Structures are given as structure tokens and as C-alpha cells.
Length: 173
Image 1 (cartoon, rainbow, N blue to C red):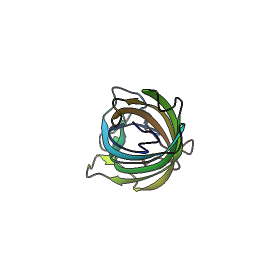
Image 2: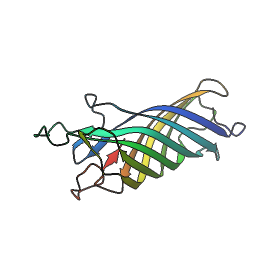
Image 3: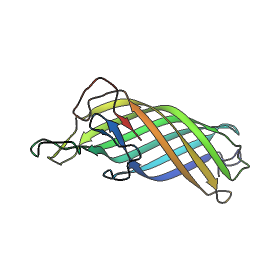
Image 4: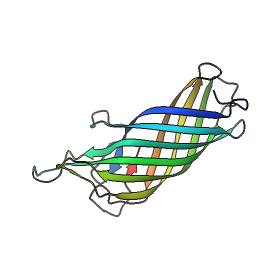
């Protein structure tokens, strides 16, 4: 667990990426197609209530368009996503608690590239992302713990899925 005596942590994650945009709203949709990613983080203890974290992930990101009426048109937005962010974490409870919920916010960067799937659409490019979320650390021993985190990202573009409707940027969870 992260403390003044152990100021650095390294995290390894399995991630389910979710999409919300012009093709559909897929946050917390258990029936939606699974797009998986792997991730790594490095966190540094600043004080009993704050940490700084660098997070990076790579994998698939997208959405199946269940409303597609044409079999000849792309019915899926699918991309490979390289994502990184820098966040500040506010720990609601200090380090002497085994169960430590937290909130975080920061700025990220994502790069989307097309897959080799002819039936999927992706407008390649890079965007900045405003990110935030909640999570919980559970200390198992002095040096080991578990973490659950749910992060939201608001992409500062609206056309990576092939549609630019102007109402909001494509979002990620």
C-alpha cells in the first residue's frame, strides 16, 4: 500500500473500454460488445490525502451500431487506442485505513488507429481528453493491494467514429 515510507506504486490493469457517442450510448451496458485493453500506472505519494498518477493503456475501443440499416455500410466503430493521462488523486481516507476510496481528475491524450476490419469505421487521429473518476484501494499487506477504478474521459473531438454531429465529443469509460 502507498504511504510516506512507500511513496511509489506500480499498477497493472485489465480494462473494459466503453463508448458513448453518435453511434450509441454504451456506458454500463452489459450486453454491449467487449473491447479490452491492458494498462500500467505509476503513482507517487504527495501527502496523506494526495497522489499524482501517470496512467497508460493500449487495446481496442469502439461501439457496435445496432441501428445500422444497411449491411453494406460499416456497422461498427472499432479502433486500436493508445491512451495516457496525468491525474491528481484525492484520497478520502488517509493511508492508515485498509479501505481507501478516492476521486481523481486530470488531462489525457488518446491516439486512435484503424483496425484491419473492413466492416468497421475509424477516423484515425489524436485528441486531448479531460478525465476524472472514482475508485478504491484496498491494502492487503504493507506492500500489496488491490485497486478498482472507474474513469470517465471526455474527448475533445467528435468525429473519430465517422460522425460529427456537433452536440458533444465522443466519450470513453
